[in-house]
Image (cartoon, rainbow, N blue to C red; front, side):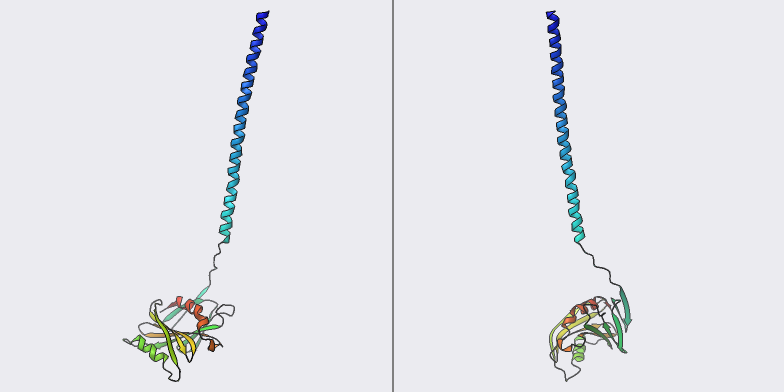
Length: 208
């Protein structure tokens, strides 16, 4: 009996040890699994934050709307200007371009006049004679620079005429000279300086 009792006790001890060991392994496995799941959850939460930041950055970018354009041709030149601008023919070889009233260029206009330009004519002499054609006017040149309009050559002249700040652009092709004169409507004493941006917009769409 004593031997049998001892055998039973040893058997129960082995069973208890086995259960304890199995419980320990299961607990360790579950703990590691929950830690791994927790780490995966943290990474998954970080991704929406990154995406949100990217969305905010892209939303802050703005795209300028396309502007409808019109094309006007006359006397050997073509100009692409906004469709909202109007073109008025004021003489046989002269047109006036007016922006729409809601435009930032509203106080301005640009006049384009065409003249015959015989071959072998010196551009500098032609410009000098054109600007100084009226001897009653006091003309003072401040600067003169070459420009390159589409399909031609040109000069931008800046100075004063009777004390009024004035900018004139002269563009040439094989048979014509074109005088491009920006001005402020109704405010001639202020000169053409406020129309500088409109002039550059106009020149960018001019083709000779």
